[in-house]
Image (cartoon, rainbow, N blue to C red; front, side):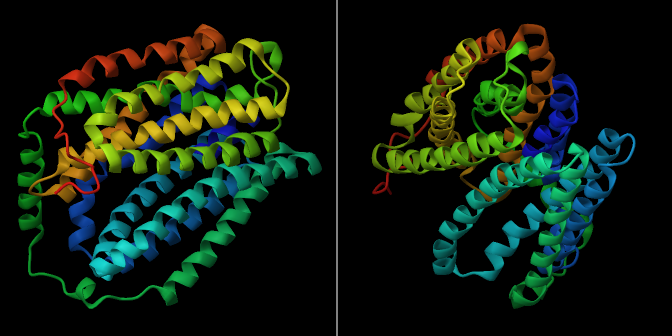
Length: 399
């Protein structure tokens, strides 16, 4: 979803079309709780992981094949749609496998490794791949061919990882001990779990908060790459594809990661309730960095890197409070399933604003669009005083 925004921009697709159609790729993460019972009851988590990785590899190869073809925007989007469903299903299976394959001590040990490789994947995707594509653009006579080669490289890498996982991933016995439950029984249990979520105290306020907390960021994230790539004559910064890979995909992701780490340390000392206000503000005020970039359009790469790093650090720091609130609200019976539902609403909060981000930018221009993004913080700030959060929640030494 991050890389194809840049790719489609290089293909000359309008901002409104890019934002609208790539935002639909969030839908599988919104609705994935609905087919999670199927992953639980049919086959093993090990089988689902390998099968979905195979599908994702095929889809990546399909994108590479279709890029040089006529109607590549429509055809590649169709394949990306299938890949998004495969990825969301892989997400369900991987989380379940993680819980089955490891004991509590191993889970604690590997959680840091999971987080580290997740961040490395972001740098590889938003940074390294874009840099490779940008370099190939310089040496190739065709932008389309450069991106086709890039996706071919990713497809080959993914198939290699699949083969590695085929032999290296352990096969926990419990994953093969299928309980004697009918599909109807699983669906009935799921229905009870789902309905109990919407009976939680303060559910309407919580759902509104989940949908609005990242409203500004949901609009901004779809337009960051187009803004960096667009020419200065129409309000952008006129960076090359390779420069965007370095600025946003590498420096930005590193700042995002550091912000998340600092946020986690902060909450462990004072608790979520203490930090909810500062973190809500930190996810908004750093948007001023893009407002500055759009008004003054600096050409100094150091200044651009600093501005993007500030915004991404603020996002990482502020996002900590949001994730902890989802865990806090999910606590209780069925907390794993309830957390999955919360993440569905979290994805919906990114999907819906993202769909209109491009159209709004084209109507307002980059300058006023970033002003509007700043104003989108107001609804969230109005909701925070009404949230009920245990003052000790999140503190390291709290019971």
